[in-house]
Length: 106
Image (cartoon, rainbow, N blue to C red; front, side, top):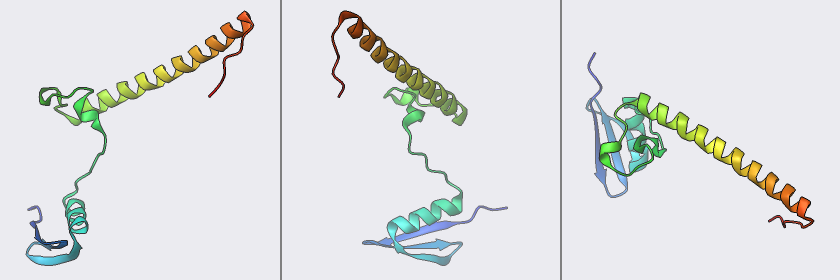
């Protein structure tokens, strides 16, 4: 099966989306682009996990599985860091109580 042929024509804010040579949508550019992406089965992901915590093109994840692995570890590390911060707050409060002083909460 051949993939559908998509073509978008632009004029100022207007755009016309043609699917296999036939007008499919006329509207603003965003709507035409979104419809084309939908027709092509494209999933947009707004998350920088593909960069794997660095800023070099050579470090970009080569596969979606690598992105998933990085995201899982990143999220687990973030959860552990938050747990440790909460524990540190409780320990600081307890230490202040033992010393007879109060730590103000913000």
